[in-house]
Image 1 (cartoon, chains in turn blue, brown):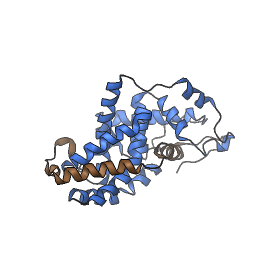
Image 2 (spheres, rainbow over the protein chains, first blue to last red):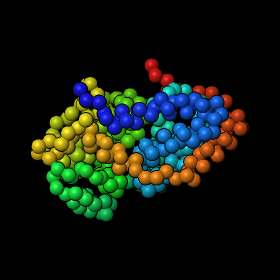
Image 3 (cartoon, rainbow over the protein chains, first blue to last red):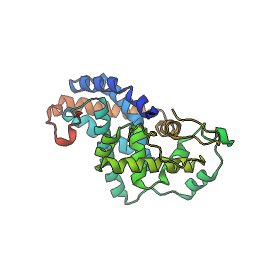
Image 4 (tube, rainbow over the protein chains, first blue to last red):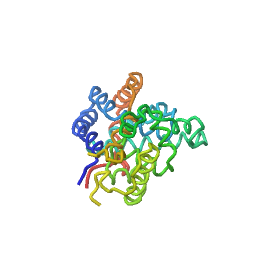
Length: 205
Length: 62
């Protein structure tokens, strides 16, 4: 059965990340910078999906907390990604509460969705996907599906870790992620995506 | 890995790779890294990293 290829790619760095975190916890500043570079792309991608343009500011807040609480963390590289995603999520929710606004598809985003992609022939429709288009698509999803997809695919967490970040049952997160991916595929105009493929996220059930 | 099918649709893993790549795209801001490392140094030097592990900080497997 298939494995989540993208998640596996992220996980390939987990050994290096775990080692960097351990050294950082013993005071190694350069190791902390390594951990930052390994984690920040996924973290920022996740935050873009939930707070949009404010992602960098929210990430900055998250890293202050991560840097301060680093000594409290216990776990490996994968655990560190779950721990940092949880911190980032709390900062994002605080931010949204302060703004009292939830991201909604704007008219501009809807227009982006309706435009043909950069390559509009059927068999090249997915060859390039801009950040803007990916963001517009993820914002059309219900928030629970968006978060599930972002945590599984962009941050690269496994099912149990994503469920822990969200404070939900693993089954509910798995369902939300599958639905979210189907929603993204539909939004990209990928026809024929009809079945609920449990192999998509590398799961056996 | 996912495949492109005869009818032109692309399933699962390829979609994930494209989506993840698009969302993670972007050059990292060196200023952001500098701020984070500064915060790390300040916390380390203040002894803050000796704080205890709370339940939410324990991500050990099993």
